[in-house]
Image (cartoon, rainbow, N blue to C red; front, side, top):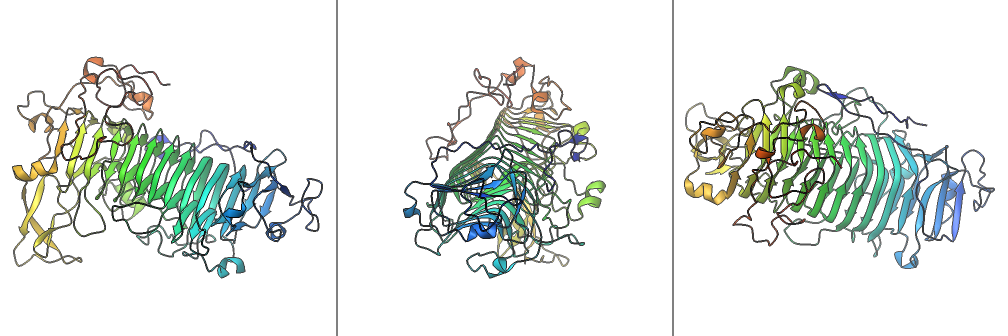
Length: 637
């Protein structure tokens, strides 16, 4: 059955930790509340295409026959469970005005899930400009195969040479191109590749994932000059071993700070992505959406030469009002970002809370330019940021690494050559653990990367529990066209181009820059509130904001009210959130109230619930204010 196996204890390791392979089920779980005018049964073994397919006694045999039956709203298509059905199911340009409130359901019958093998086809299930569709209780696989005439003749698809388990598309091929009310429930996706096996690895041979190279995707919803995608529920979906992303939604149009972005109300719950070649999930120009109770393991995986080999567990771009909570991000691999979850640029009100992030090579926190009111709060990070370019095992395995792992990245990177923002970022009450034993065999550089372009940044009540002093930001200061160019970090700014006969421009036409510390006015403009964080490395004899954390933070960094002491973790070298439950109530209860930034013109600060948080990582009530994400002697609920 194409490798849909249940494995509990095996997995791939990061250091000494083993990632579990996700469990899948073979049960039909979706209970429909709809009444269907016509149910079509497909039996790949006993069916006959001369049958009408309208009963289990007279099933049709092939999906080719199904395609000729002119599917309409009110139809239910059921594939016989325990069988492999080859081909594709397409719902294209069905007029929503004709639905009259009816749905189209695609699922299984016979007591078990059916497998839809779309090898050689563009998609397993293709939903284009069609609303009110339910897909449930199926296994989908499409591992390479020849390009069929159907695939090559498709003219309405922007990125030819891609393969999707489920493709949701809104484009301008018809007037009513709004796609809404889509449900995907209890579906397992595995082994989706455009190509047959190849000898030479394609991993990271290109920077852009959409460069026409040809990939395999899990669920991909996209707007191509259409009216948009709205109201999508994806629940209990497992995506395993695809060459690109597990789940992705992508809107269209320019991002200029105005609405609408044209993907709305996407709800992802209880989903799993395992060993995707690209990011586990990615959301682009999405509004009013959430991702909850999901697990993403080993995104950016390279166990197959056909994979991209780079990717954060999840990242957002151009999103507004997006909540991510109660998720697990673990084992992200590859160059550049590759965090557990990161907030790329042009976002507003993206909040990551109550998530467990562990063993992600790129790091834990990343907020980039032109973002407003984004937040990481009440998360637990364990041994993130292990990628180190000087680490020989890493170099041998990855080749070009890109940049070292970075625990905290808050910089203004965007598509412009200049850095802008981010603006009004709130990073508080996170428990961040990096231990030498837990990170073996890697040597973690513990990088902090805070750009001078920030305008409003709260960093309070966090626990920074690592054994060595953090390194400064990895990006270089450069000079071009009479101005500091692109990168300024660690409370230093470019003050002019370096002079001398041996100073040469780089490939971008920029020169190494002279740098100087920021002056008082420039620091004030950053609006940095960094205080009341707890450090493993702490100098109780320090006399000012710098020296108390001189052993912990890079040179030039400070904490207005640094805390020291032992939280009394249950097992500091463990890999589970419950290992980081503290017992030292006297220390943990020294938290401070989170201030509303002076530069923040919103009434809320953090869009989802405001700045005051009433419960900890495990759902326990918080009395007063605490340090870290977990109340002392917490109980896991």
